[in-house]
Image (tube, rainbow, N blue to C red; front, side, top):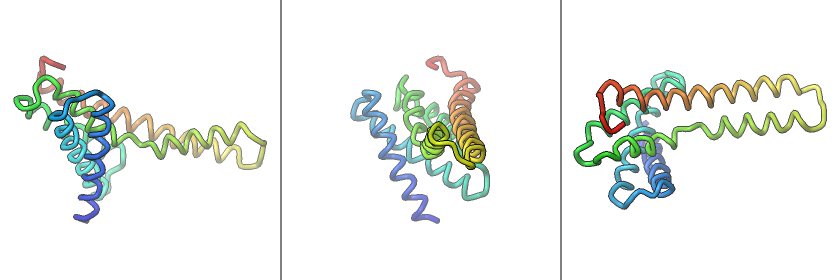
Length: 152
């Protein structure tokens, strides 16, 4: 379990730092983005290993990351919320989104007997994407509201 958790944290850090580059963060903030990404994916991985759903684990991970960023405001400054967001972006389920899009595209092709099951599978994947992104957004927003951050 520990090597898998380390693997998830490492690649979460790399992905979050990459998103920090896309957001034009400076060098010091990129390190914090990597820390936030590692924390987010480690918490989500632990949650999923305990048996909770992807959506619930993503919510908990986003909330923990947001709380950690807000509590680290003296080192992060007003960018704490942006750093928490960059840390949570690697949790967006791109595989499910790809599955939904490919399924919808395959239905528009040649008609077959598998059209209805393909649509059902695609809609299920799309609902998982929407609910996971919503859970991440709620997990980022609720701690900021509860902790009464003025910069948010």
